Each structure stands twice: as C-alpha cells, then as structure tokens.
Length: 258
Image (cartoon, rainbow, N blue to C red; front, side, top):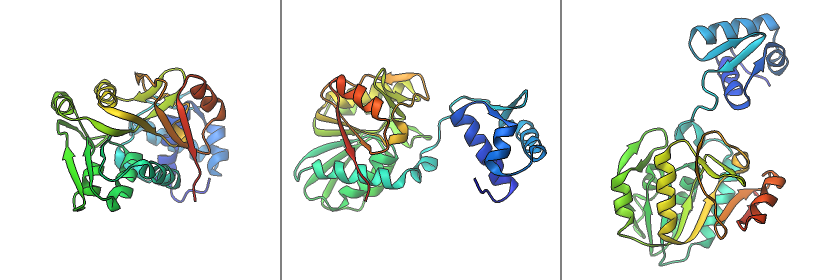
C-alpha cells in the first residue's frame, strides 16, 4: 500500500485498526513497506495523540467501530453507489411521492432525481435537500427534527410527528450495515426507530447498501429486515449473505457498475 508521508500512513493505520481490529507491527510493516521501527514510532505517536491503544506487538482502536461522518463516507465506493442510485431512480414514476432517508447512497439517488418531472420528495437528510433545492420540477418536503451532525440527518419526535401527516409510494433507506441475521445496522437507536416509522408509511420499501456493508455489523442497534422489502446492492456483495437474505423472503437486487 503506497502511502506518501508519515501523517497519511498514520491515518491509514488508524483506519485499518478501526475496521479490521487488532493490528500487529509486522503486518503494518509489510502493508506499508517500511521498517518495523518506523511502525513502532508511528504507533507511539498515535498512542500519545490518543488515537490508538498500544498492545503487546501492535495496536488496537480505542473504539472498535467509530462512526464515520457523512462527509468521510461520500467518496467511498462511488461507482457502486452511483449504480445503485441509477437503478433506484429507474423505479420512480412521474407523479409519485417518495421518501428519502439520509446517507451517501440515498444522497446519490437524490442527485439522479434532479431530472424527474412532477415528483414530490420528502426527506430526513441534508444531502437530499441540497441536491434538490433548486429543482423546480420536484416538490421538496423537509421532515425537520433534531439535526444529527455526523449523519447530516434530522430525527427525533418532530420528524416522527411529520411522518404521521404523509404517506409515500416508495421509501429509500440507507444503512451502516446489513445482515441476514439481524437486519439493518445503525449507530443510533433514534435512527432505527425513525427507519421503522418511515417504512410503515410507504407502499414499497428499498434499502440501498453497497457491498462493503453487506454482512457488516459495526454497531449494536438494528431494524428488522422483513420479507417483502427490497435490498439493492452491487455485485461484490457476499453471496452467502445474499442467499441467506433471499431465503428469509427479502427481495435482493444486485446491480452492476458501468
């Protein structure tokens, strides 16, 4: 893994420790093509900065799975997210009323809906609002609520109350992770409750999650993924997890990038 500069290498070490768990000096030395003593200096500095905890022979993250901000996630898996967004946009018909969750993949869908005609879009996400704010052919409804800065989303009792005033042809949900065993993983209990309420107000429910999120369980709050909902992901998703989801009655659509 060619990385230019100590700062960039240390950022990558933190990323590896938080996504894969325990990381050894020898493994990091091979990964970055530097000496073990260089890695030890990196780990010492990261420990002093409070970004890692040292272990015998390596390091581990202070938090097993810290939540990345929406800004950090926007550039990840760009092609997969765009392919998912294009497929999702193709399901939307003129004159429909749709509900968009927060998240980078659903935000990519909002971008694809900029050319829609006669559409009403309600959303809990700032990204969707920004994408559609200047589109005259789309009526935009903001559900409001309490802003959650990390996810750039609105939630809480005001958002829940607004949902009671509307119904939707389709809802498109995001996810921090998806497993056949537990369903949709989120970082915050308020997010899971809001997703459940959003799904209840729509005739069709879609979960948009690129392949890196399939089989992933970074947090401990969940939304059940019932039969009849549609999971939309890309071709790199774990086939065993996809088979398990389908066996439970979940519709799974796998899209391929361009």
